[in-house]
Image 1 (cartoon, one colour):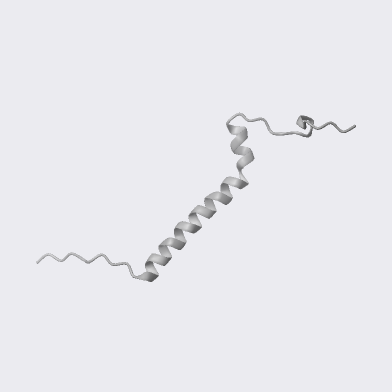
Image 2 (cartoon, rainbow, N blue to C red; image 1 turned 90 degrees about the vertical axis):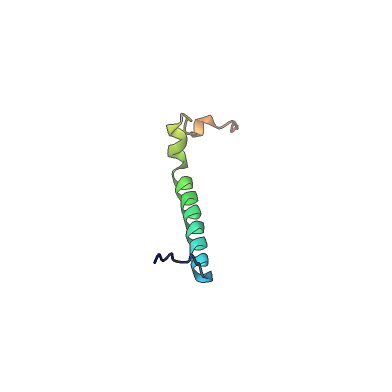
Amino acid sequence: MHFSPLLYLDPGSGSFIIQILIAVLLGLGVALRASWGKIRTYFGAKPKTEDDDDSENV
């Protein structure tokens, strides 16, 4: 006799999975924002300095 378990997700499990997905997305967003300067420098963008400012103080 072959037994195959039924696939079942109760509302608590579904809510938990959604919370994990949201946490992963927010965590990736925070990590990306925290290291954005390093990422831009890696791909060749020059870091902005005060001398690059277009406005001239007279």
